Image (cartoon, rainbow, N blue to C red; front, side, top):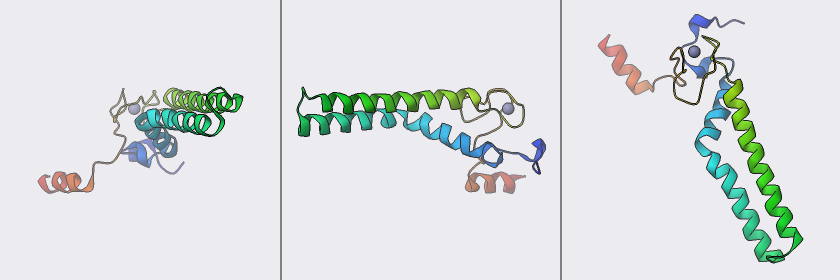
Length: 118
Ligand SMILES: [Zn+2]
């Protein structure tokens, strides 16, 4: 534990950065993560095995189970991702819902302007 809470200026620098990155990815792309495998499974199943084939049904079921698992994992990340500064649930936004810790460091261009003004 070298980084104390005071040194953390954004979620990217905290020990939970990887978890936060996965949560943000799923937050942004969960529709694609769920729909693309289901769509691909449907197309492949219908094209190669026919609409009434049990293989098609299993392919679609597998893709739906995958999609539900992804959603479940997303929910798990939302619930378990804790803010490293205040210890409360971080939430889905770009800032901590209770203390306002930003998810990312402000982009360098913006930071340059801020530094220049100060
Ligand atoms: Zn916080």
